[in-house]
Image (cartoon, rainbow, N blue to C red; front, side, top):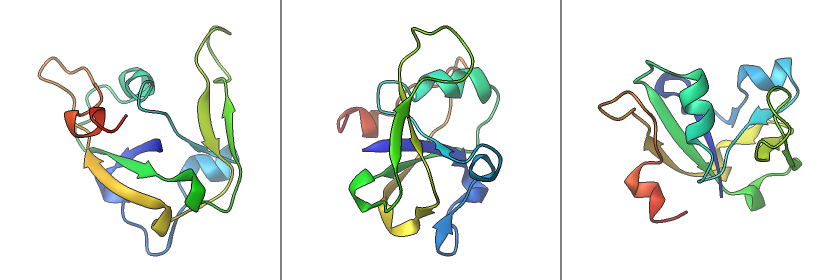
Amino acid sequence: MILHMCGRAEWPPTDVYRPESLHVEGFVHCSDFGTVHLPANMLFTGRTDLVLLVIDPALLDVPVRWERPAVGPPEQPLFPHVYGPIPRSAVIAVHDFPPGPDGVFALPDSLARLG
């Protein structure tokens, strides 16, 4: 399973999910259970409206490539990038993703048991 975070207002789409990054960069940014907190804490500080989409890559009909981020040190972990729209049927669960009381994001307990 891979994870994608987005604002609660962006989900659910009518049929397929096409975030802005798909149009701008050509892929949908995703994470795995061990790395989702990294982009959340770097890019979404102060947001309280996030959800995590749990995506089953076997239900996608587009490529998923594990790649390093374009910016930052070369030793960064690989992240899954989905090279096409995500059908609503490939999202097997949606979890609220609020920051902790200290404002820091961490994998929700409900997902920690799965990862």
